[in-house]
Amino acid sequence: MSYTIVDTDCTLVAEADGFLRTCAAGTDRTYAYLLVDHLRWLRFAGLDTGSVSLEDLRHYMAAVGAEYRGPFGLPWRESKRPYGHSALKAAASCLKGFYLHLSVRGVNAALGERLRLSRLPTRADRRRAMLGHVLHTLPANPLAPDQRVRRHPKMLPEGAREALLGAVSCARDRMVVTWLADGGFRIGELCGLRLIDLHLREQAPCGQCRGAHVHICHREDNANRARAKTKAPWAWRDGTVCGGTVRRVSPAMIHTYFDYITTQYPAQPAHGHLLVSLHGSSLGRPWSTAAARGMLRRAAARLDIGQVTPHAFRHSFATAVLDAAHGNALIARDAGGWASAATVEQVYGHVDVHDPVFAAALEQVWGHRP
Image (cartoon, rainbow, N blue to C red; front, side, top):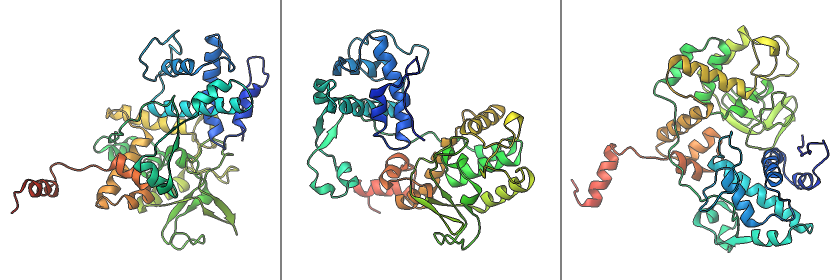
């Protein structure tokens, strides 16, 4: 599935289409939505891709939510929320790539030169890159927001899992709560699962995990448009799914799965998705991520426990696994499917200041040895 941009008269926007064709699957979708907003702003501000300057692009970034010391210009997107930090980084990358693509083709070469900046690599850059010890420079983006120190994320309210299991009304919803809590799934991963991805018995024929597990496979053709973030390669071999991201499942997850399959799952669905809609005009169709979020939101509102999002389950899962593994980020990384153990340590690694080990370490440094 590919994405492009058309104008108000349904003609193709050739500059945007040429750039989006160079993007990988998934990235083109994100960049297409970001570019639509930017192209609308260009028309609103009386500019075009051949005349826009770096300062104009900084004004645009300020208009969508970036910090900027100076006049913002005309109001923009007044009825919409500003971009968050992650969206601002994605928008900066999109704009840089778009205008570099145009400059190579002779459009606004002066802007392209100003966007071709470089910086010195940090220790984290060297650790992440292959042959990082020989790195001398890395590309920089003058539009990117300042890097923020990531704080410990918001987790589920205390006792939320048990309360939600009692508040939801059907076997499918109990399964969703259990799988989010015990598996640390992203909501796109969970709604994108198909029955063939589930190997819920010992010694499955894929040979990739001895225990019960699932294979998270990135697919672009899901009817509910749910996609796994990680694009690990996978294949269909001898009637068995192999590859993808392998994730272990708990006995409670298996129990809720069989409860759902035997009581509510429709007979012989054509699509093969795991989660399906149980009511209304979409009865039997694959369940969307928006519907899953809505179910959790309504259940939390009935319980009056504050906001509950699918990603809060993932945060709680990561913290619990990291604590149980005594800070071993490699175990937490593989349990939750993160790409980097450094991300797990940075975001979820924290210490209890009341821990006796923490106090003993400070006393040793201070010289109060027993």
